Length: 366
Image 1 (spheres, one colour):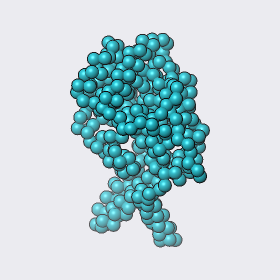
Image 2 (cartoon, rainbow, N blue to C red):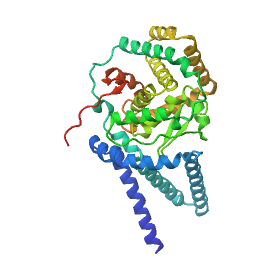
Image 3 (cartoon, rainbow, N blue to C red):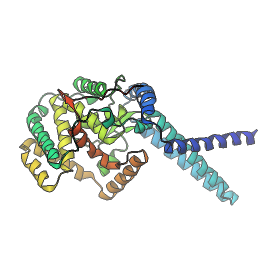
Image 4 (tube, one colour):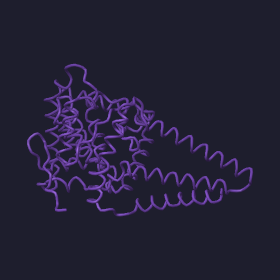
């Protein structure tokens, strides 16, 4: 009986590893993924999971990581002890095989809950693009437009009552729903509350502003975010929750959401775009953008720089972004972390209606 159960267990583990490898390498058709997962199963999963995670004040990912760490430590410790007693590497090799199978299972769960969104139809193929690749002057002019918007909305963004949490802000939520409807015919997904996490120190050390937990579809945020940064970070992560896994696409969704909402959110969105463009232009253009900032926005930019410098560990930051670059490339984002900046090209090439509403391409015949 024990031998038969063990054989079945090994077969299941082997099947999980083979299936995980096959799905990692298989060239799934983007339109099939779009139809059956990103616009079919996934929104239903998101609305269910995010509704539950929003009720919890703590991060589900913290519990999952702690449980995984304990399970790994117990499994390997027992295997090392058993190998030592029996003077055989067999128990240790079996433990390694169990860990590999568990990792395969986690990867399969990742794909089923969120990861297949990396294979969906890319944003440039769903939008009407009416301009050629932008020139450096086009990028600089968009940067100046961002500066002008920051200068214009600064006062309104820094006055008024204490803002409600982003996930309960009706104007930001309505803007997010509008953007989703502009990009897809699927019913809008739920926005997630920004949660504190045990990874907060890691975020601080590596200059990460936020992330989503793909296993709980919740939003985790850097605890040091300044108030005027939070609306864009929230909207960016909501873009991921909406199934736009590519960083440029999540940035696009986040920026569109912010510029269609209230002045504080608009300011946050334009600040993000200023920041992104400043990282891409040359020194002369960067100085040109900085000189155009009014006193208030310039103080905010300096406050963000000070926040980043206070906590960063450069060596860990470089290693972390290198790992993330490889992660993105493994998930078919060929540009890796450089995909963050592709949002500027997307904004400059896309056709918009009034209020920065992107125009979609007609759906291809089924």
